[in-house]
Length: 85
Image (cartoon, rainbow, N blue to C red; front, side):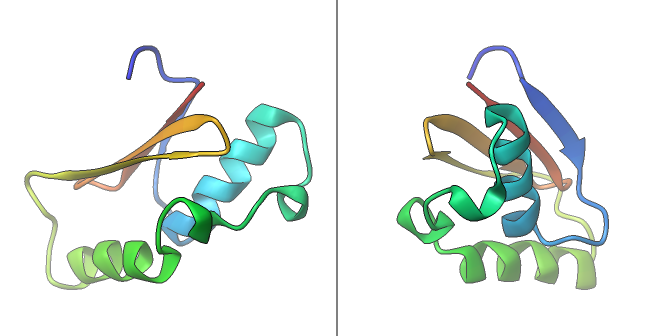
């Protein structure tokens, strides 16, 4: 992935919700008009993966990468989410 279009760390929102909201903001569309995130990645598994890392302590390495609605998405072990076009 080249230059980030939108990058931020997770707050209290789940990674799946943050991704859909950021893609919608970058695309200038309503989040509800986007296709289901499940078409790209299992949102429950993604949220569970990062929820357990917050509960059990921070990860030090690793990331999840996938493409959603034409955007490259990367969620890093530290909770940072990058969305690039």
